[in-house]
Amino acid sequence: MDTVQSADGTTIAYDRQGSGPALVLVVGAFCNRFTTKDLSAILSADFTVFEYDRRGRGDSTDADHYDIALEVEDLAAVIAAAGGEAAVYGHSSGAALALEGAAAGLPIRSLAVYEPPYTGPDGPTPAFAAELRDLVTSGQREEAARRFIALTGAPPEAIAQVQAAPFWPAMVGLAHTLPYDITLCNDGVPPVGRLTRIAIPTLALYGGASAPWAASAAAAIANAVPQAESQVLDGQNHDVNPEVLAPVLSAYFRSR
Image (cartoon, rainbow, N blue to C red; front, side, top):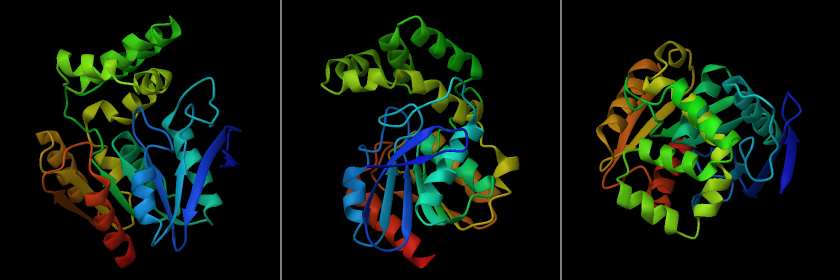
């Protein structure tokens, strides 16, 4: 593990493995830098892969308030540690964060995103983010995690299975970061005005077995970003298989 300081003094922890051009992985909700180890194990044959704990997770520290701009600065710090320029792949809310970073002009060579949670106009709101913060502050971390999962459309029986799983305590441990993920959802609507500012090659991926919003989000990105294209991964859902994803990312980033 290595660390780098973000602009506001937050410590960001990261791992580095492999050799070749730098590639930064940005994770989504309930995830930390260990979540992508199966993916990075494949990608590290072609790239120097950087996996980091987003602020408030794992070995990274946090601030007393949240703003998307702070997370963009964190990503900038990791890219600086990677040599000053990198390809970036983001998943779910990490995809939304990667898009925000590209729109802000970070030194990203090329970008791939998988299903940023632009789930539609009835998507997660700032009020829901505030509700989750209040639950965590009052010590109801499990309830915050449960409500977040329910928001994804998971039925009660599926939520009960997650709560009975051995990884549930780790998910609860990240409950305080869920409002960050909700904020990145942009009320469920693609931030078209900012997306048009992205000036790098961008690949918007979605799963063929995912909910309809995923294809709509990819199409919106492809339409808004000047150098963007979309691609479906047949048979995949939001929890994409690394063995399916990695060859697509490798081919894309090597061609760019």
